[in-house]
Each structure stands twice: as structure tokens, then as C-alpha cells.
Length: 302
Image 1: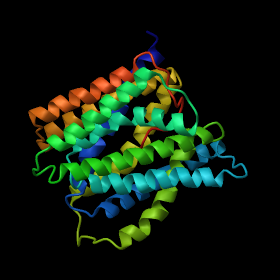
Image 2: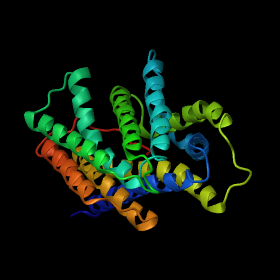
Image 3: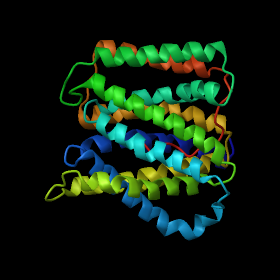
């Protein structure tokens, strides 16, 4: 295997590890700060990071008439509504369960593309979609309230709503990615996110002081996750097929669950483990020998 290709595979694994860790990091930050405060500070840190590199990436932005509605819709779906649902969802469910629900994203995108873009899916894809949805519902219903997931059914429903927003975001990006670079679109998301979450954060309760742990988590989410996952994912796309890179997203829920078990002491019931197996079965059935719907998108900044 050529060295650039090998490095690309390693980069994808690291990107999924970082993305999976973001659920745990956000869960910990929410113990000290209000959801909208956490997301606002994260957007500010991310925006500052993109401003620092803007002179090198601005050549990827050439506005075309009429694109404002797609750019605005993209940013409204994500990060705006996406993080509203995800941050609040993590107040009620565990980081591991939230990460598992992200396994639904490729299937949900395929279903939405069938309705919106008239992209046909095979019977196997639809069958896998139904299996995975069944698994998510079973995992939620089997959840027992505990310290990490006081109201798992509500939390998982909110996380699923976040995935619906991610679907809308993906469809918008499909229209924009041919005219704008992925890193510029990600930067625009951060800039608009700052404006969107500013009034929501202002209306939230702010603590009198913030611990160093939470402060570093905010920096981690804003810089390492937002810029790091993008950089690693984008590097891999330069040496691997998009379908190969997309396949690595199936590792995300695994890493999210592992991090939550090791760092947060999360434990799942036997019924939930069985439901997780059902979810993975649905994803595998739907993706076996199937073609990717979206060929090149910025990763969800989750």
C-alpha cells in the first residue's frame, strides 16, 4: 500500500476517534454550562480558528447569484438547529447512545435523496433502513433512566432530530460543493453559528466562573474537533475514493460508545446491546455493494 494511501486510512481512523470523543466532551461540558452557552463558545473558538487561516482558504469562495438561499439553509440545518437538538439531547441521553444514532445518517440521507433528488435506492437499502430504525427505537425503549441518561427516550428523539437536520445539511451541501470548497463551507457554518447562538447564549444562565477542565473542553471542541476532523477527512479524500472514506463513518458510533464507557462509566443493558447489534446489521445490509449518495461533503462537526 502506498504511503499516502496508508496515511489516509490512518487519518480517517483518527478523524472518527476525534468525532466519537466529541459526544463525551460535550456531555461533560454540559454538566457545568448551559447547552447554548457551550455551543456558542464552541462556535466562537472555531470561527477564530478559521479567521486565522482565512487568507489561505478564501480563494475557495466565489459567490454565485442565488446561492444565498442554499448557504443560509445549509447553516440553518447545521450548525444552528443541529446543535440545538444535539446539545439538549445529550442532557437526557448518554453519549454512547447518541453516538449510536449517528449510524442512521447514511441511511437517512439515502431515503431523503430518493424523495428530494429522485435518486433511486435498492430494496436492500430500504430493508436495511427499516432494520436500523427498528434498532434505534428498541435501544431507546430498552434504556433505563440513570445518571448518564435520565430520560433516554427523549434524549434519543432529540438526537434523531439532529440527524434529520444533518440530512438537510447534506442535501444543501450537495448543491454547493461543486462551487465552493469544503473548508470554506465549514468556515461559513462557524461564522453564521456565532450569530445564531449569540442571542440564545445571552438568554441562558452563565456561571460565575468556569473550571479549567470545561474551558479546555470548549477549546477542544472548537479547534481540534471542528478543524481537526475536517483536516483529516479532507486529507484522506485527496488519496482515497469518497466511498472508501464514507465507509469509515461506521466506526463513529463504536468510538463514541467506547469513550463513553471508559471515560464516563456508561453501562448499557443487555437489551440495548442487542438493539445496537440490530442497528449495525441494518447499516451493513444497506451499504453492502451500494453506491454512496453524497460523494464529497464536509464531515458533520458533531
